[in-house]
Length: 284
Length: 284
Image 1 (spheres, rainbow over the protein chains, first blue to last red):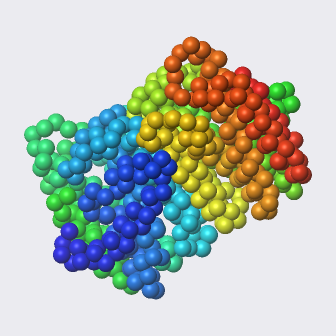
Image 2: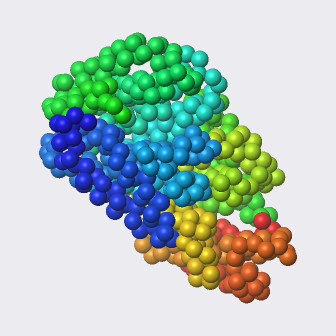
Image 3: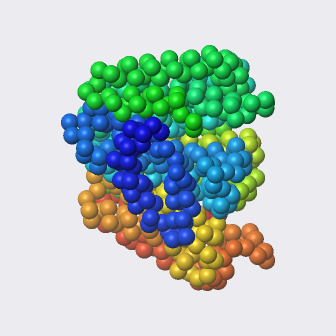
């Protein structure tokens, strides 16, 4: 991250990580606590929590009261983490390493990885249902996260990714796949941050457009980074293979610029704008 | 089931199954809808929905208004079904058949089975958050289901079952394992049915005791049926191997009798009593 983003991140990240750690402590059997915590603390950038906090700070009357937004950030990080644990499974992407560390099914075993994913996914909804908000807000957050993370959103995108919808033949299908697989959860994080800050309908719409553009920009930038790393290898269809690197890069920048523009009329858009620029200017 | 229980079940089961079917219809990619629905319609007895409806009818002012309880019954059946799909995976119990049909990973593949389980689990919380109840009741149901189904409940019991807590050496550890693995969800179904019927604190306590006793009785009866089927084979420790068949049978009957007794003071305990007797007198 850029230095200002790193400095901003340091204002909320320790509190987020304290909440995550506290949340998975009281498992039975006690030996389950270790594999449960393992994938949550791997030096990830916490992009989804960052979006949630940034959207909150863009709108909240009292942007310093982080305890009012962090439970939503915890929930989205639990969902994101479970999806990585299950994605890495031998029957899925079969990845042995993530951020230089053995994945959960390598460090423990595949059965444990299935259960860790199930447990983190399940816990996200308790966090929201018990959050420091009016009951109506809690119900809204649970319902919208379930729809964004489930078969109408992220899991549907993963199902398309493993080929359940047939081959990925064109940019429209690939776009739909990524809107669900990564965009839905990024969008939820952003809109949820606004929702707990009391966003009105117009502001929620702005945040939804921001999230939609940012999610896709993020994926295009990821495809560019993958193409650099895997130069010459045959891979699954990506925006780079379908559009070429220049067109992909141009579209990513345009999407990020649109995202940054659309939030500029919110009271304090600084972090959201910085995150939009970061999405297309990072090295991972 | 006994004839009266079958007849009673026919009064709500078609409506439950209609709701389940409607809930998993609008997947993208559309081809995901088939594996999503596959494990939900296998001729199961719908024990957890039955407990939910029975607890509702024991207390509700208008026990015929099934639309006020069925969403809770749908949610618990989604959770139960996801847990079977993941339990059957090659890396877990590696079961090829369930109720005489190929399991999801055999009928489709293991990656699809992982995603189907994740999707059904996720959907359960949208069902509750969007249910026909006050927002406070919805939040309470989401929080309690998450705690009953996650690492503090069912998934924790499964983690113990795959050996994460060490060997199952005695009846106390085995009892704790099953209280979590099967008892927690059975207990939730029962208490949730009462909660949406407006149970007061005493009545909720009665339903919790009923659920706790019934869940364990159910597991003891299951172990007895397994022991008959697998006579002579070496299996994992069970109540039958630790206590012997006679003591197991006696304890199961005593627990079911306690469950039936404790609900006898509720306004309409008929179905709960019949289900308690059925739990220990069934052939599966």
